[in-house]
Amino acid sequence: MIDLSKEKYEILFEKKKDHFSNIFNDATIIDFFSSPFRAYRHRAEFGVIEVNKKLFYSMTVDGKKQKIHSFPMASEKIQSLMEPLISKINKNLVISEKLFQIEFQSSRAEEIMITLIYHKFIDEYWEYHASEIASELGISIIGRSKNQKVIIGKDFVKETYNFSKERYELNQFEQCFSQTNPFICDDMINWVYDNCSPSNDIMELHCGQGTFTILLSNLYRKVLATENSRPSIYALKENIKINNKENIYFGRLSGKETIEAFTKKRTFRRLKDIDLEEFNLDTIFLDPPREGLDQFTKDALINFDNVIYLSCGFESFKNDIQDLENTHEIEKLAMFDQFPYTDHIESGAILKKIAQK
Image 1 (cartoon, rainbow, N blue to C red):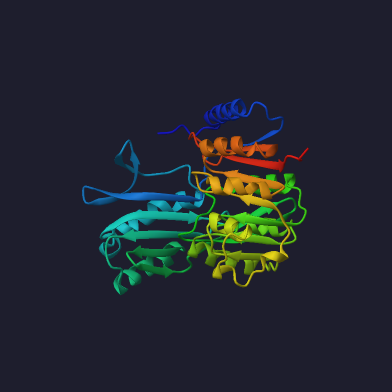
Image 2: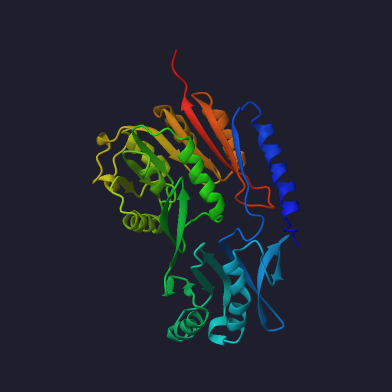
């Protein structure tokens, strides 16, 4: 069991800081952001294991499933529901049969949705019994199986993010990526807000549900945001609507396709309602998958005066920054402890194009 004490967390956080500083020892300004030492995860996924004809939550450790009874890294709301939920599941054969995974997502306002994932067809009997449990626990339940999704209540939770003295709401939808640690997400949002230099328009690749898109729309004249996931584009539309934003333009494109459209190498019907000639894009915001940036995208960054880069993969981040320093200089760096008690490091960089002599 991990020692989730404040003292242990501070020791591990200092080790991460030292590692980050040693890698970027030439950088003059590095900001470090620590996490709460417990109850920081607002998303949690568990396997289901049967022991003596009873179901338990499980996690995989060294390749083997191990049953667990609690998860103190999770939000207080998730922790409070783990035992009541599994107890009700064990008392109901319709709900427990062929259940193999349970996912929790909560918000800081204590909204919560729970996804039950099955190796069976979800029928009306399941829906009836799941509705009873949802009502008794005051939660939303989503049932998922192959080609099925049954929603009881809502398939999203509403999270509020804070920057400067302002805030905005985001509906975080089931099956869409969202920031696991909202406290660190606030830090990331504020770091971008405090350190970017808004001028004209901005392009955002891999925008997801709009976690940073809404912030950027408060800073830049226009935002061109793209994302390759259909569910995330749907979520983005909803979040643009609830925030009453009229300066966000979006399309379902990969990062590479977006760059191809921007550099006029290809045209896309998915951008037919957007005139790229009307944008003055001198800044790009990047939050790529863990593997980092492809070479095509890195080569294209010469077209942008300013680069804002957030990364969930430290090794790829190091390599990408090294490549980008051929054309851009680092102005600011940051380390965000998104996942305490792990080796994972979330990073941020703000770069400016080197002036031609």
